[in-house]
Image (cartoon, rainbow, N blue to C red):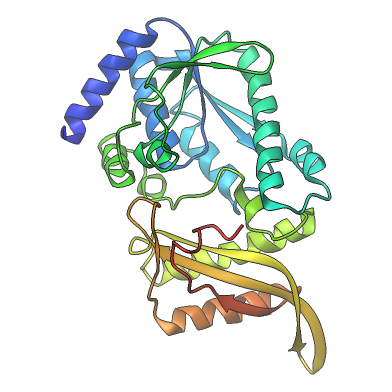
Length: 308
């Protein structure tokens, strides 16, 4: 394994040799993988890389501002708000796999429209080793991707042989903010797979608020770097509760906090009980639609990290 500095120099040279003076695009999510890829390729080809950040309306609280402020002056950064387009396509859809497929399709549609404006010939992807190992992929490092319109892009994957901990080391070496380097993994479909059942603007907002409370309390306790992932899921189950001196009938939120090395397996994290209690009390007191909070205690396998 090369040192982080050696890896960066080697990767920059390879990208320069491959892309040359052509243009490339990348879908920048703000996660460590796409962020490291974006900065690496920017070092190699400068503003010939166009980093496209698509807001699908299913991001965490403050995420649009955080990603924009981090990269608007460092990259050739393009922000696209497609939240209404995604929500319209998802209206009434309950099945989680169908939601994933729709979100993926709309993302491709939006990204393709932006790609057509760039005259790019290359697509940079933040693929890392677990991505292709877990799917038994035998994809070569360099291959072509044909978009639905017929536009063909050659794929470049500068970090495909790295694991998450190695990507973080590279991120630190590139002087990315720790907030980005140690940002917990977040699924591509975002909060769309953290709401059980059909999505509405209202229930996505409930999930967003609950997730923010979980993140706040884990980070406040100083254990955010000790656990792999921590988040809230809004279920479609309603439970009787009491608010004030009146009976209430509100949603059940499930809190999921796990440890992992590479996301291929995961175990439930052991947390101070007072942290769990505080999370529960804050969610039920600050989100009027919620009456109960439960804790997920299943490892992967048999469960997956994400709830749906």
